[in-house]
Amino acid sequence: MSSASPALDSAVPVRLAADRERHFWPAVWALGVGSFAIGTGEFVIMGLLPEVARDLGVTIPQAGHVITAYALGVVVGAPVLAVLAANWPRRALLIALMALFAAGNFASALAPGYVLMNVMRLLTGLPHGTYFGVAALMAASLAPPGRRAGAVGLVMSGLTSATLAGVPLAAWLGQHLGWRAAFVLVGAIAVLAIVLIHRGVPDDPAPHGASPLRELGALAHTQVWLTLGIAAIGFGGMFAVFSYVKPLLTEVTGLPLDGVPLVLALFGAGMVGGNLAGARLADKALMPTIGGLLAWSALVLGAIPFTAPYTVAICINVFLLGTVVALGPALQIRLMDTAGDAQTLAAALNHSAFNVANALGAWLGGVAIASGLGWTSTGPVGVLLAFGGLVVFAVSLRVRRRMRARGAAHA
Image (cartoon, rainbow, N blue to C red; front, side, top):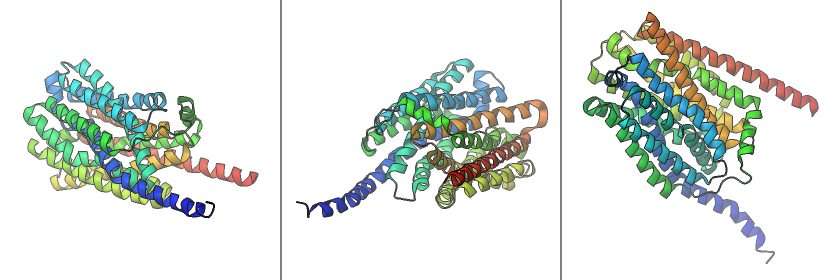
């Protein structure tokens, strides 16, 4: 009996690794389809603002408030749902969140007016952050050692692929069958994701000791708040420009309406490449990747006023704008590293912060446009936000150095 124990014990890690590998790809695929649905639903409205504004009888900057409403839904929903559902089994939680997202999109397609449309978009945004947070934790838990950011990047690739395929398809559908048809398509993709998650994601219980109170412990960590600040401010520049990319292309560049989906696809291609590259860089050097990508964002955004009048130049610039999403996996892993046991709330708050950036960028871009500064003014607005993110990043580095120095002094 005792002689067999060492062999059995040594086989356990091998068996666990094999079980993890067996579940990894089906789970990532299913979670990625959910990400694809959410990405399509979040970004498609940006390509349909003129149609939405015309149908609801408002101006384009006012229609941009629909984007802000969705983003605020994410900001509110991520912490609330993550805390309330802290002790839910993860697969059941993912299915419930995706069902709420599907229902919200079908309801958005039926919204009769501007006010109700904003309400429906806010409700649709509620499950967004918690879904991505729990999906990222699930993928990271199944990933091989040293590949956590890569696993998170694979899940996020559903979102970035949405901008390459889902958003242009939904935008085309919206232009030909009306913008409401685009939200019906998003709801249908979400229903498909529910089926795939049920089949492909392991039915793991909630983490041992999980509770709403423990999740709230994430808020006690200074580095959690600083990382959220980097995302909320530094990411806003991308949204300041992309929220108004369609009128920028048609009014400044002079691009025909039928050419807009092709440029949106270029943005999506940049997001796909940036997401995968950012995940790989984050696995190698996390903090330098975050700082470098914020500087890169400022450079890309600063070029917008100079490239906008020229078709080829703005197409390249929009592609490069998409690569800024590389910040996503890096900040997600940074939050996991600094949150202690409060992983679910921290992971969900990452997407709250991104959608603060969404709301902030769309709002400041709209203010600049409404002030008469023109469609290209969103570029300089974005530069200011990118530099704001760099300032918060510098503070984070300084705090980390002080904490390490304190730890060395007490050792």
